[in-house]
Amino acid sequence: MQQCRIWAAYDDAGQLQGFLNLLPSDDFDNVEATYDFLRQRQSSLPNTNDFLLTSLLEWLPTQGYQRLNLGLSPLAGLAGDRDADTVIDNILKLAYQNGDRFYSFSGLHRFKDKYEPAWSDRYVAYRGSLASYVRVMRALLQAMKKI
Image 1 (spheres, rainbow, N blue to C red):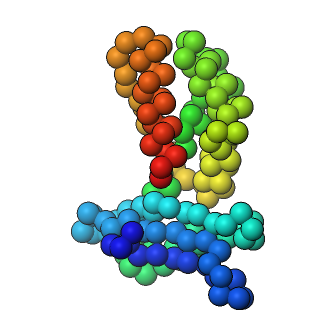
Image 2: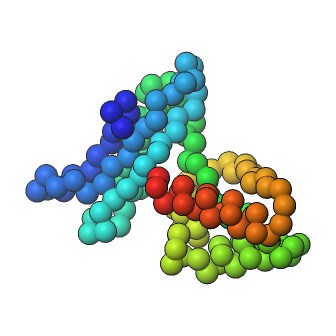
């Protein structure tokens, strides 16, 4: 965080309500920017994250950036009307549709989707059985909690 540019939102009393950090770019042309944390207090105004993100979006072109990478939207590809092909597809679709108690897959996707991003698929590869897959997914979910 000490190497990141930070956007912060404060209320009238000077209390921090939310923040966003821009990751340092290895892209010397500053073509694509990526943020890491976008957080707001539970008590802050509901549009605090939108304010932070739109502030970043206004600043990026002034620095020569052409696009912003909004990051992943885990399991969103399984949420559609397509038929699930495997047991794992069915489990993941169920997790996406009902897993908001553990991780807000659908809320995250709705938040990002309103900015009309150009989505591109990402995949998880694993070898072995359903048990191997469960171990991989558990590790990914654990990693996402720490972010």
